[in-house]
Image (tube, rainbow, N blue to C red; front, side, top):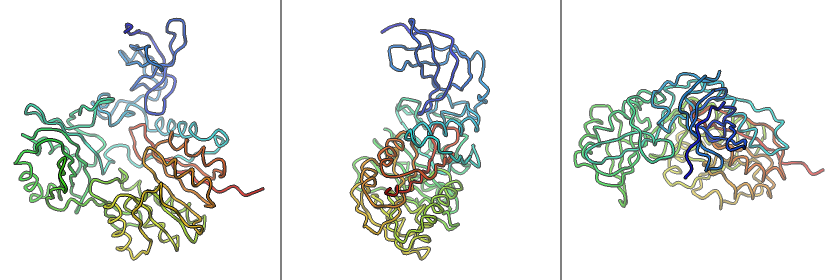
Length: 425
């Protein structure tokens, strides 16, 4: 293995995925170097491993900060993998997200103006989070994974969690004392705004674990918890572990324990209203919502569409979606099915999809051959979004692109793209 190169470098841009990019002369060649925790305009002394392509570097010394660099609100941000852009100003984060989304669009669509929606709060905004716990040799470690590892980074304070979740996060060390193994804990808000825990564990939980949780529930520190051990057929439940958020219509929205939901309640409502407005303007009599989760969008869409079919593969999420619709007297039909295999009928005029980070290639291939008039695609990953949009560009025109700063302090962004089927000429 060659000896790393040490060189002075100026950070020029931010790459999708979070790293900064500098260009450095190495062995007579101009090479791109990916550098974590850099900001545009930074002048740094970097150690560079040029055996990789692209080359990888790490900052040894910040010689001169760029104009977009700010002091991180958390002293652990350079180690913890949770907030990879905390050293950047909020405006810089938004601009970089827009640039990455534009760069991912099909080339013929890159002239489109992207409407950016800034976050209402950039700290203490997360009302859901997943942390990792490792217990070994009598020590409990709780934290996000360090960048590019599976090692949790213990922190004294998480700057992006809402206070109730931060209190629950701090309690985990004591709850897991004398346990062995590792797992993850999803933190969310339950009844009365108190925290709930969903534990997935590989190893042995201490016999005292459940007693400690019961005392925390009795004291009002937690609303409830459930724990699933590796190989167990069902979880152990203490109190009421059901997570809730404020729905986009102002009515409480039930979540599936341990399931997916947006990380910020208030901004999630803003996103849902944006999606509903796009569907309303399409004036559909029939629509399908794919990857619908617990009905975050559905509770608004069901008011706009006479015949709405809500498709979700997770059983608990389907149960929650049905309960949320019933609580509002809404009649949308919830179907437990894989979106890739679900067949919509010929009357469907609008399809809304909000797939996981891996995107929806099989679905978009079918949509490109369909007669669906409008597609509203919600994505948390610009690269897989761009891949899927290139499939749709053969039959659809873009009508609008908007970004939502749903994950401040990180390189992630939520994007909504509206597409209308191209008329035959």
